[in-house]
Image (cartoon, each protein chain N blue to C red):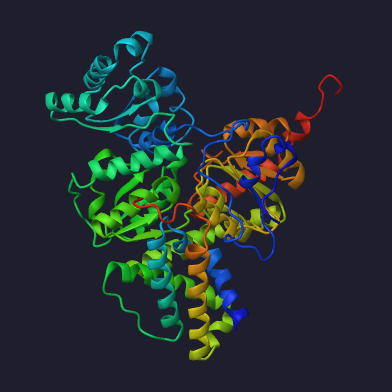
Length: 463
Length: 112
């Protein structure tokens, strides 16, 4: 079947090029949704902005860094609380939100003085913190503020601090994906190579594209530690600013989220000759494959096999318990982009769950190549889905559970369809062996919750 | 033999992320590097592991060989010439799907 024009899209026929239903014998040379393209007027997109992609996804995760948002305080609030990425220093990065609180008078007269004042105020108020990200937002970009010049002036006055400026206002690019790109490229060109890490192991990696969501990095760090592998930088889960400045010394870049951080892995290969190994950290069998690849690279296969055996002994019986009960369930994945291809085969292989519909908010065509290659025939693949499309696709494929973000999650809850937070998780971590058991548990609990039936009853009519 | 090649291509498409990196030149490097090694490993040859990229391709190839032994067990029992035909055919077809005939508009953008 070629691209699909859904009934709800007859008034915006351009949407046909963004929706695909896979049939037997087809491959991506025949059909590939348009993606990473401007949202079509008339479609109610659920995309985030470019600034959010830089701050909420990547920068805001750093555990020792002030995240100063140069704009109205709403931009700070909306990128502060919706992701749960803890850290081992008492969650410094989750406790505070920093904003220059730009007002009309600053828009008229410029906000650079306000920015300089705010930078100094926050460094004075937090004297043990010496690292800062500054983000421009739509308003401060439009008035032409030069935050890099301000940061340079502050660094000259306070030589013990370091500041990284992310010039990625919300309107830049078509989705949050642009924010990932700007932050990655800025970081590699301006900051990587400035700090020499202390090497303590013959095996060194950067683990790229993992943001310690509900402790994902902690799970993986346990594995790297057991294998004797030193992680110079997690980019950026539970990481420090300076760890990420020392990424150039790693022997291998292990990449999980290729969409948000593939750029820095590519640049590290180009600039420093560090190979890029893409793995899937979600999924039982995928995790084992990923670890085996790292083991082959370093020649530590025995240690890897020992670790896998230990983890499988501990977690496989639990996974199988859920598999027995989830087999045949139908799942929809409506997330950012990469989780579509990370998860579709993993839930099928490890849990016997069929993924019947997938929608990506900010994936590129590369992500659709991956997911269509991995996904099932008959499954619906959507780029930048809108609400009416979600309603129509739900009617078409009748999923038992939907993994998505809080925005679409609220929508599907109103339809009394079980929803699991596919971005920040319900009760993670979801990565690694134990993580996939957690995912299975949340899926099982969602599918079997009595609340959905109760929610559909009219309490005025129930005795 | 064509059918055997297609089975290998289907497995590679489904299991391997290295064919889908962002730019055409990186995809080509991975496809040639990994699949050439797959051929060597399946025929019992000794892989060359001199550079970090050699070790990377080896890690990816070894994992694919393990998958092949489980999913396509007949492949490792083919004669050397037939195996060469299948692997060479798969290299050509993966190049075609992921580079030459790919609809991905970002493959040839200069820079990342």
